[in-house]
Image (cartoon, rainbow, N blue to C red; front, side, top):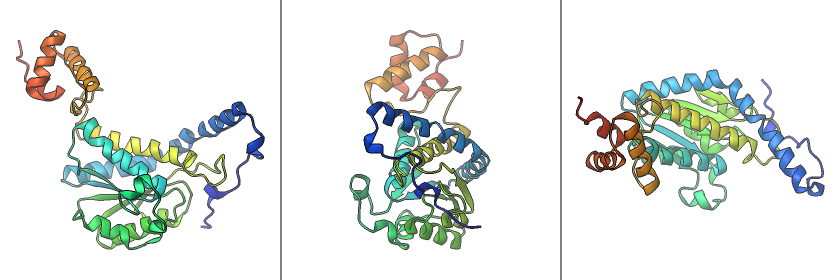
Length: 271
């Protein structure tokens, strides 16, 4: 199948510099509205990969995201939000970016072009056959990501990907590809826009659905969340009040005693 980078094709809008602020925002918003529909078409691919991730994590496996630039940063954001949201260890979902942590804030020149580095980065985490590695690249051509998945395939490690071009080299490399075809960007080639939004939506789906399947949500509540600030402590207290017949002060005391909403509710004496 011929491979065309639709994310790199010319914007359907011309003379952006002549548009009013109103028109700019309206047109960007109109393009953004198409992204969830593109994600919807990829739901079967997402479901397949999530089911595999859950099965591997139940065996003690971890989830790795690898990417460069915006894609790498999005993976790191999703990974870093899992411990506070779901109370899991920091090394259960791991985001790696070409160029290392420096690249989170500042672009590292040519880091994404190193086809060998991703495997080196993964090896530092003692990656094994129970783990799953998802390569994230809007273009589907990033050497850092493709090289990492190739080495994972050679070592019988499950691979997936999130890309925004159909039939890309990355999708052909990953065992379980997710292709969200969003089309040309509002600003030609600026894949931090629709492509980045699509990747963020898919990452939200993957991590949230996985954690729910692993029992990290009760009802619709984040009962294992880390109580790392006043807002979250207050939220936890109110969750407890919604589950058992106690006052705010009693719920707060239970939360302080047990350290999590789940434990506070589970250890409340049944009457």
